[in-house]
Image 1 (cartoon, rainbow, N blue to C red):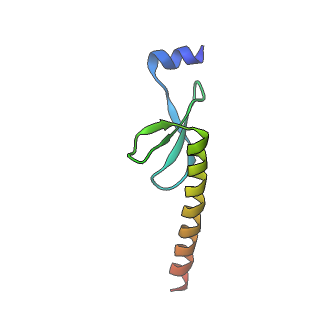
Image 2 (tube, rainbow, N blue to C red):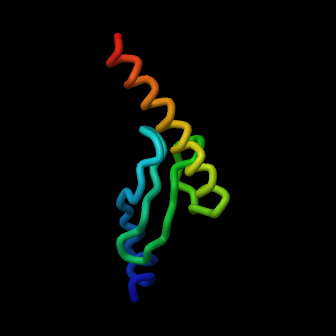
Amino acid sequence: MKKIFCSIFGHHYSISKKVTSHIKEYKCIHCQKEVTTDVSGNLSVLTPELQDINRTLEHIYQRRHTATTATQQVA
């Protein structure tokens, strides 16, 4: 029934995970379809390959962001 709702009215995505400040993962609140932003900013279906890429990006982003914050606090 929920998939019918999405096929008629379209998906209603909410942010499920913030990977970086520009890349986020979204999930439809009705049918649970998962998508993410791609290189050009469009929504793409969240495949296992893209999940792995997002995990790696998140790890790099967090390491870089915490290093930058620590440097700013010392100065």
